[in-house]
Image (tube, rainbow, N blue to C red; front, side):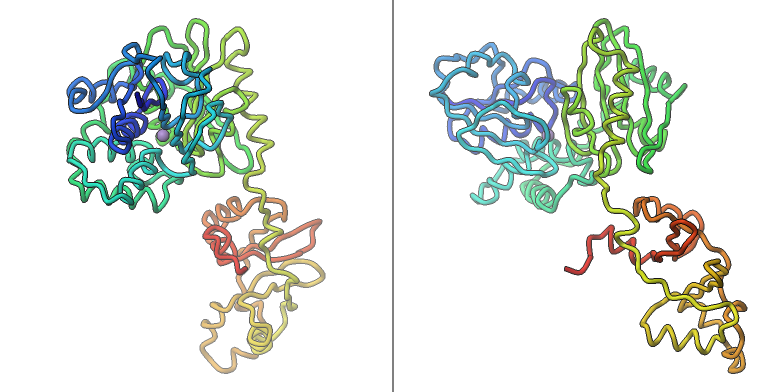
Length: 433
Ligand SMILES: [Mn+2]
C-alpha cells in the first residue's frame, strides 16, 4: 500500500499536496490528519468524497510499503504514524518547501526547495508529465498555492509558483471557490482577540526594523489564530509581529513578517518551532518559559541575526570629491564631467556646507552664472549617515527627508557618499559582477 500524508493542523498547502500526491503516484491513498485548520475542515466537509482520502486511524500500518510525506519533514508533526517511524523497509518520498529546522524523516528520495508552497513542487511535476487535471483538483491545489504565497505576493514567492498557478488556471481552477475558502469571515471570538491585541502592542526596534509583541491569555480554544496575527500585523504596521498566546499549560507563539530580512522560522527555531521567512510558530510549555522570557529570547535572537549584513560602508562611493564654497560653477561642471560623477560635496576644512548635484546645473540659465560661486546653487539640506548602518535605514532617511544623496560621516569626517542609485542597486541585486 502506498499512502501520502502531511502535518497536523493541516493547512491548504498540506491538503493540496496530499491530493496532488494521490494523482502523481498511481494507487496512492491520501491520509489527512484528524486536526485540520478551520477552512480545510470546512472544505473537506463538503468535498471529502471527491478525493481518495482516509483518516489516520483507518491506515493498516502493516500493509504500508511506501510513504509520501508532504509539507513537513518531522515525524512528530504526522498524525498517528509513529508505528511507521521505526521501519527500515519503508520507502519514503519527501516533498517540502520548509528548509529551516531539523527534520528527522529520513527519506529515500526527496524534492525540497525554497519555494512559495509545497504544492508548487508537485504541480510542476504534473506539468512536466503533461497531465490534465479536473477543475476540482486544480482548484484545491490553487487554494493551497495561494494560501502559502498570499496570492503570489509573499516575498518567498518564486516564478515557479506563478507558473504553477498559471497551469492550474489553465486546468480550470475556480477562483470563486478559491476566494470563498481563502477569505473565511472572522468569528466572534476571533474578533475579541483582535480587539484585545489592539489595546496594547509593545514595539521594539531591532537592526532598524520595528517588531511588535503581544501577549494574550486564552481561556478557550480559538480557531485560526494565525490569520488574526497576519491581519493584525498590517493593522499595527510593524515589520514583524510575534503574538504569544498563553493557555493552561502552554504558550503558542505565532509570528508573521512582512520583510525577508526578519526570518520568522529562524527566530522561532531556537524555541523548538519553525516556519518560513514570512510565517512560523512554536509551542513552549508554561512550566519551561514565561511569555516574558519567550519575548526576551526572540529579541536576543533577532538582535544577533545579521541577515542584513551589508552596511552603508560596503556600498558607498569614495573618496568624496569636494570643492570650497567659493568655487565657480564652471569649475564644478568641468570637475563632474572629468571625474564622471553626479555629485560633489561643498566643504571647507572638513565642514560640510552643502552638496551640488548634476541636476542643480540645470538651474544655471544665464551664461554669467557659470562664474557664480557654487554656494549660490548648492543644496544646503544635508542629511548625513554613519558607515555602520544598513541600506534599509539609509533608504528610509532618503524618503523621509526627500534627498537623493547621503554623505557618510565617521568621526566628523566625510568618508564617502551614498546615492539613491547605490541603494536601488543593492536592493535589486544589480551589482556588477
Ligand atoms: Mn506549506
